[in-house]
Image (cartoon, rainbow over all chains, first blue to last red; front, side):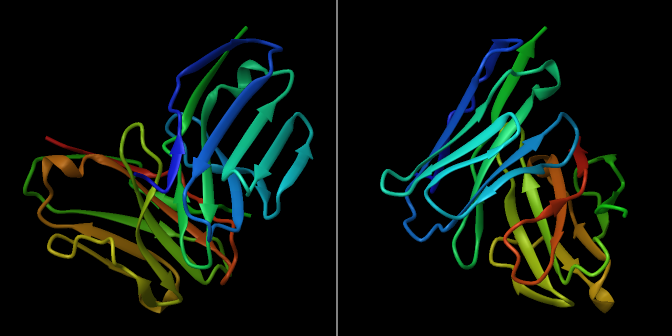
Length: 109
Length: 113
């Protein structure tokens, strides 16, 4: 079993819809949680970073962390075609950063 | 400010040939990483440098892969000889020492025929 599980999708939604992405993890030592966005043929870029349970909001993006359930989520409100990308969750303990497999999202105009 | 720069962006080689990838990290970033990303997968760490010292190379297949970071700035990742299964994207990333957030380059896409 992988330390970080992420449904690879793909996910296709109409423009304006809410996109919901999630990851589960098994390593209780993970303290830092990130979401990276990766456009086709580009490197991952940081979208959200949090280190505590609860919600963090940045514009149309909301990250949720539930450490008791070992579950993190990313919500994208009012999705745009420019949000079409692969979204990677990532988690870190004191030493190592572990990535999920990524979920590919397509927002249809 | 320039980001993490990688070259070449694309490389096609025959199996058993050597290949090398180069990375220039963000200025001032002491920590440099090489990751492997297979199609449909998340990045997996190959090696991490703190300045010129490789502090985590446990996932680097040392029979055919090697890396160096002379002078603690630029880094080179080499594969010799390449195998069909090495076809993937090789990502370089950098960060400040101890930082949790990494900045990635665009990657070098390798195709081995």
